[in-house]
Image 1 (cartoon, protein in one colour):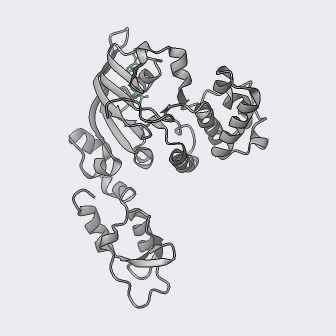
Image 2 (cartoon, helix red, strand yellow):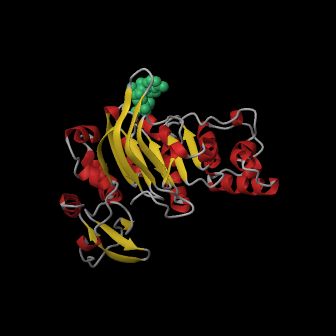
Length: 328
Ligand SMILES: Nc1ncnc2c1ncn2[C@@H]1O[C@H](COP(=O)(O)OP(=O)(O)OP(=O)(O)O)[C@@H](O)[C@H]1O
């Protein structure tokens, strides 16, 4: 990856030795280098005040770096027109920031309208996006933000950020203002949405479970935006790079790894003669699903099935072995 253009619908982002010293002398970020691939979701995580939001806001120039360069699609954000830049970058924040006196439809259509799209096209796009985030346009389009639940407002925020088909999406604690159950549902829906839209997304969170669930990669930062590790979730949990990351991911990292480790097909045992009544899980399930099914089952093993064809069985020993394997 060298920060050059790869796709029309998603752009790479490159931080090159980026620092931010605020006017009062606070060094929020020092010499950060980070390369985000187009179409991937990268999570920024780290303790409070370590510079996550500062890093995020340097991408759309709400904060200007004091050293180094931020390249979006190969272009230095400091040489881009800030207004044009922000129209190409969706931004979702914790309390959404919907316009209270505008309907949901008007809120979602904000950027397309600013870009001068013809009215019918704005309406078509708005309705398409409301459908995409699971809100019926006829029902929710005419409502005002105060007539929605927190989770619904959050969805409108995501729809608005996607409206003009941005090349990058910045999300600052997008799901933290809703209760844990709604948050889990929004995370699942958002992951499915990302499979469809495949934007380059930079997402800030405090929540490691959210990071593991959503991230293609996780960047762990320490105070001053110092990068500790940048890895796929499974690799980060399996092999923390240093004591800081080890402490940050916590002692239950093995449990978290279950949720991101696929079932090892080559570890499956032959099917016994009778499998009636045994728990069955799909082949694309995770080890966490397998363990949950196992704990509920009478048999002490679960059948792994590819659609309608049983492939083999998995035992607790196999799960243990799969987690102990190098590179798992
Ligand atoms: N406008 C500002 N002027 C001076 N210092 C600032 C400004 N904005 C942020 N900071 C400081 O920069 C550091 C990084 O802040 P930032 O908001 O980027 O951290 P964060 O990791 O997002 O924090 P949190 O997880 O608590 O939201 C903090 O010490 C903060 O006090």
